[in-house]
Length: 527
Image 1: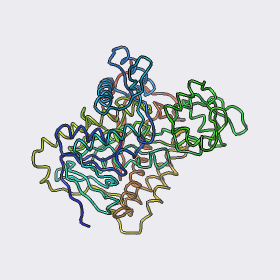
Image 2: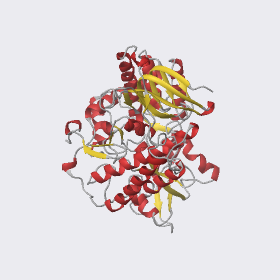
Image 3: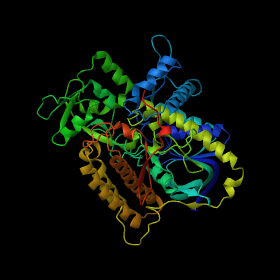
Image 4: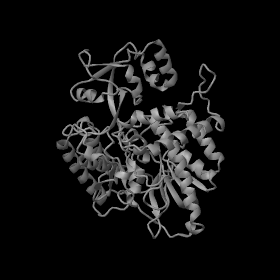
């Protein structure tokens, strides 16, 4: 079969809400759009697998002020009020659009008005896929991207990948590219996150973009041992127990470090015994998939103990990602835009997790801005986009520097997971544990760069393995550079917040990783 060669104004990589909004808004702006996803647009990723809250706040000055102020301290005062206000405005508009144009079935309150503070992922993404198709966007399902294309000046000029179901390589030359590929959860088995291996961040770094907030990447979510569902909010109703049945003092949904330390020595159990009848009914209505496995096993989580674990969610629920350099979510590389969890969420979350609500708001807002911005950039090129000479920018996993037999992608993934999944390395951070972990990861990268290579359908597995190594090295370089505790980044050897480090950290590079403070002007000042 011959290779598929397409031309478009805008190419979008990803299949979650940020990608769907980017493709939709680029098409509505008049662009010819192609979107490609590892899976099936609308069913892959973390959002499609569950429900999510949304940072939806009425345009009331007092309510908006409270919404912005509520998370600033948790995020170490690294968020930006200007970005917060823009996201609140855009989210309000997009959620109302879902109600009026997409006819999303929001629940209705006792006053007869719709409650628009949450979305059921499957229905949300089903409607988004329909809207994207109706807008004329060409969708390449099961077609993972393997690299970006650049022109002679280094501007991003499209992407290449492989169509799994057709066993066919493809190339899309485009005026602009939006990376909405999600964060990186290191194949931890968190629900919906197997597609989230940090590929977009690797591709961005290969063309010269930088990351921001990568130290804020040690998000771990509570989950029952027997399922991958991570709905940590429900555990605010829980009591946690040692293996011997005594209460684990200090443990809670917001005190997971206590749970992590206990799990290093023993199993930990839980019971949602603080939920009254009303809360129980509301929980089942809001997140029915949370209870599926319990019901099948005959376990009542409100009255019976069940074992729990912590699953790494990395930069999916963390805030680090590709740095956005402009209000339209453009990066520092011409023609490249980032949205959703692929981009840093520091502008609205600082150094603390966006959870579901803020991340959902960021996905639809940044997707909207990136789509419109990418369409504008493509339009500014006139007819030059299709005529540019392009080349692939991919390195590790595609174009090794050596010729010796390679470790397989499975060996690379296992080596990365050994350094980033253990609680005592990534969650309970200490320089004495971070430094040897980083040294090991540097060795894994050197070997992957020298010898990791795959073709066809296996190329994405090799590229995802390389992306996880790169992600982990940026994380630990930034974690070692921030010698304080701020936001979710907690150093046991530096337990206090340092006013002199009230800045964001930029990180980049592949063979040689660098870390540097961002200019203070970009960071909001604590009140």
